[in-house]
Image 1: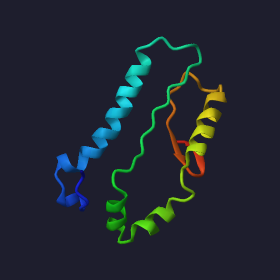
Image 2: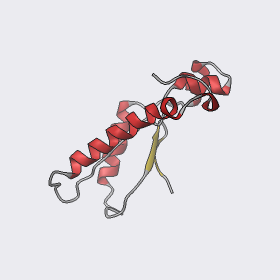
Image 3: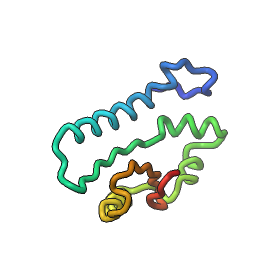
Length: 112
C-alpha cells in the first residue's frame, strides 16, 4: 500500500507503486488486444483511474475525504462510461490517429 504522505517524504518505490499498477494493467490490456487480429474499425480502449489514494490527495489539500470527493462530482458512474465509449465507437472521424481523452462525470473530452 502506498504511504499517504507528502511527496517529499516518499521514496521512488512508494510514490510510483500505484502508477506502476495502473500503467501495467493498461500495457497488458493493449498488448493483448493488439496481438490478435482486429476487425476493421476496431476500437481498443484502455482506461486508468489516475488516482492512487484519495485520502492522500485530500490530506495534502487539508480537507476531509468527503469534501475532496464532492469536488469530483458528478461522479463517474458505469452508465456514463458505457455511454461515452459507445459514442466514441460511433465517431468515425480520426480513426487513424491516436486519441487521448479524459472521462469525468461531465463526459468525455479530448485532450490536446
